Image (cartoon, rainbow, N blue to C red):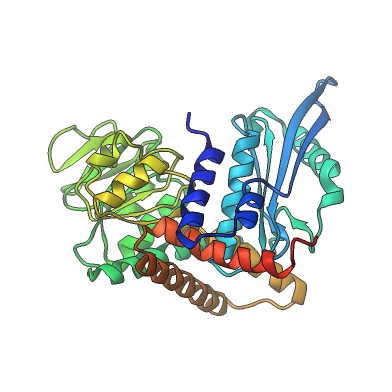
Length: 395
């Protein structure tokens, strides 16, 4: 399996070379400022004690306090947490937020724990790292005080804003522009519905069980309703409801695999599922003219090179899915001021940040003749390196 931290460092090196980043700052950005590894003893419901391993990576705080969530998963590793904290550093800098990057994780299957066990694990984790947390030092999770549904919607709006800006740069119209979305979970399904409402033609969607393709287009709202009712994705085939297990592998409406979805002849491909989906093996067969990454790390560095050579415009994850940390920052600001914005006010602020971030990345893409991912890293590194130089390495 591709090492996520190795990928992150390759991205750093590529952008550092473009702007001839100071060797001192480049070297310091090759490792987190602090990594915590903690043992968390938890008394289980049966009275036995089980010890879990947790991590917290605090990568860089030149622009502000560390910021980043906590992941509970059996595949959590130190390299993954380090990579995610590095990418969070870059996301915050790309969006122009006064925040640094952090990430935490615990090696655990949360579905295998009772509510009480999960609570004791969470409390034990925070107790183990609390000395290094605080609003001016490290904020591991947002204080949710605004409507959760609205905030989730705003997060998805950020990804749509990025896509719309890229479409405008390409000179395309919404009507007739075709889209395939790999991953019909929270991010992917919301993106599909927003794009469908805006007039884009959703040709294919998929989840972990497989996907569907319809030449006539898919109504993602109806597809979601079919999935909720039957547990499988579906679409309307000439007025008839068809679930994934009923759709044939041939014809205008057919079943496809996740691998096939990535290679469909559509205008826009949206990887919204897992990491390392577009690799050097399948990148040459990607026919989309634009890729908008909603998932973290869906494209490997080797695939990046191939896609760039083939003229594919790629809106990278560090730009396209930076909505999460932006929305979290909004919550932080509102809580600190004890003053809360209306939905319209928040969306206006979000759009302003997005447009500014996208234009900054696009300007560097044109200036240096590089791909969008490298341009995003360049934009971020310029801000981070200036902040690091200004404080002269002092903590």
